[in-house]
Length: 319
Image 1 (cartoon, rainbow, N blue to C red):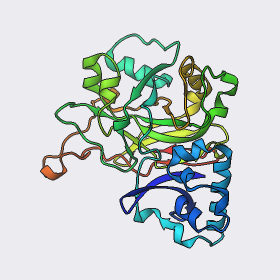
Image 2 (cartoon, one colour):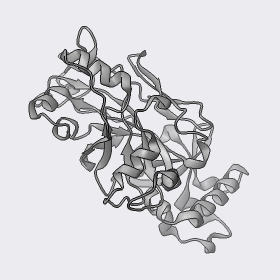
Image 3 (tube, helix red, strand yellow):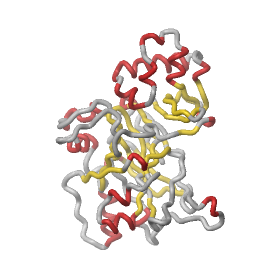
Image 4 (tube, helix red, strand yellow):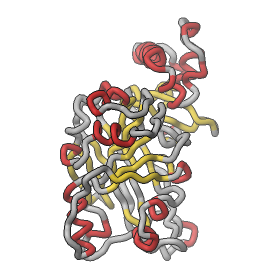
């Protein structure tokens, strides 16, 4: 299943994509279903509530989706084109956990751009992006032109935690995943360099586009065999596969959980491959439009394709 959060009449609603550009509004579907007494509406309040409901919540969701696909619950079915997609988890309870320098070629391009000797990390390098950075996949990314002159992109596979835990063994780490999504770790490179750390340059408001959906763990056969790509103005800038991670997903979860409790709904971005703007020759960056002041907060030079997709059956990921 692919879970989405959409705005309907100004209210955030949790849904499941059912094909042909349609979705099921789960809370509305539950109110229409004849067997709705087996579940409570609260579990469909948002994706975190559904995750916390565990297997019972997923089973109730599957029943509603099956009824919708069979032609029932028509009043709860809408078109994605008629609503505004939010991030699948519009307001995470915590900062988004992130892993830096987790693809060899990205590490190499970074050192080349700085003219220094390559040194691969020995342990995962963690940082976070604030909750205020999270926006929907198709939302406008603020340029923050008064703060940074080097706004850059980074496509990443992100994990959504299902079952929480602390000191999670690497052998069982994948069992703690609810699903997968995409984030764009938009970064103010000059701010990052100025402060000599990652948080500030990667923590600006609106710099964590997420989504458009979360794909359930059971729909992804092997998360270490997913294609990952990003286009700028139709041009592929990043293209890799999660098999090239330095630290695989299981190790990321296990190491992050050492002495640190992971909870349902936590989001972990797993690093970006090569192809980022700051490492290009010549340097590529976002810029503010000069033709229309009303559009000066939009990405005018680099229109990043908003049709982000995380598909099932390991067919790949694009952003």
